[in-house]
Image (cartoon, rainbow over all chains, first blue to last red; front, side):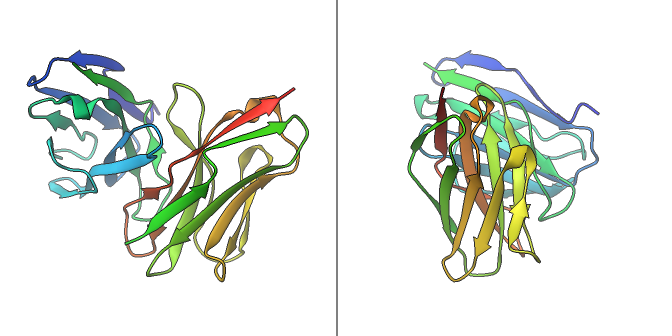
Length: 112
Length: 113
């Protein structure tokens, strides 16, 4: 199993550009989520999904969109990038609601 | 809502010394508690977790943590630090009826030779 994979590893955007961060898992996990990590703030939940076709907002959802058309994939879309979205983004998944979450290697995004 | 407080953003220990990382939480329902470790330029890896049952939880790499309900704490310890323990450590909590994890701000551990 590859576990949780994320692409790209690094990305530089200009203000106002849009892009999609990809996340995929091959463990047949129902639960998937996106976090952003900023210095001194830990990880903050952006959006999460409890199964295909079901998504919900986390702590910091503004400026981001998600969809879950398959169990395996959970892309995160930045609609119009802003410098405040410069961060490291992690995708995570778990089999059950309160099970251990497995994290991807992260995407480091810089918005100029 | 739940929140997590990690006391001390940086901890420096000598090799062979005790590692103690403090975590306090607030939760309106019984919590599930986690410690994750993050090595440089990597994702997070689970060290240990508490869901129910025994309050002293043993994890990987010689770490353990004790859930103390009366103190709302879940401190992480390791009796003897190794150079490979240098990393950032995150405490996290979820409610027993929820999926969402709330993370502390993290504690960076450096190990002196």
